[in-house]
Length: 145
Image (tube, rainbow, N blue to C red; front, top):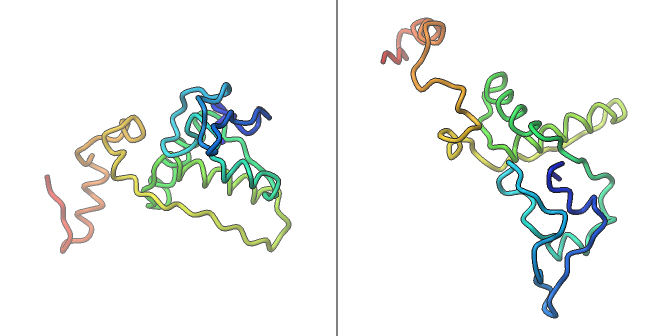
């Protein structure tokens, strides 16, 4: 859950209409950068399942962006902010897990839709000399501008 919008961690349930739909915005909601995570209410199915999870990990501001960028830079995995936040939580979980544990983190998103957003704003559209040298090292795959 984003640190800036800690709905579940607040301990406040979502006010609901008779049909279970949210009656309004959750009082703990605040804007946050993790698209796809944490609308302005706690979904009923999530609220009903609280207590079934082993742990809930609060994602600090900036961790999703930083981890998403690191995944792209270091692992070649292009994912969005929610994917970065998910991986951050998995890494933090792994740090505390017993040796030999198996941890699964699903990143069911692609970063393509975020190329023109602040997530990848620090990456130039054109290759720099170092990147061109790497491209030139494989003659059949040269990507000259």
